[in-house]
Image 1 (cartoon, rainbow, N blue to C red):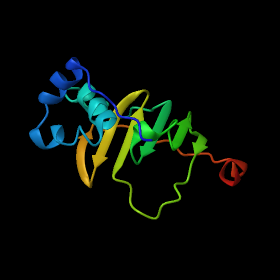
Image 2 (cartoon, helix red, strand yellow):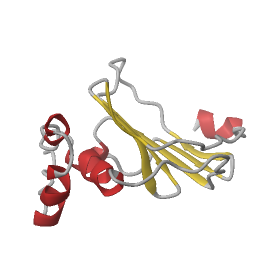
Image 3 (spheres, rainbow, N blue to C red):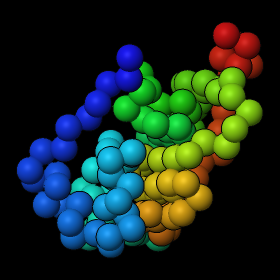
Length: 130
């Protein structure tokens, strides 16, 4: 059984500040759209910003136990490969705990990456095997 996320009154108010086409996605992608609404009016990350933590979610994040890809200080800590061959309907990137990028159904909803410098990633081969 799939859980149903219920939007709070304040979350609904925040979503109403976004374009109508984004708000229409909230029923199908509530967690993603709420995360986007929290940073909607924020500025992009500054030039040469080096993140400590990068989390990548794909699919519907409320059905996820955590990020599909988790990078901390340039080291890959989690790398979960999705078994489906279908393209994910949503991709969300969190930088240091903030939604920095969200794409839903092929449409960019939020892009606050700005001047983020993505790290050279160090991958432990045993992580990929497990």
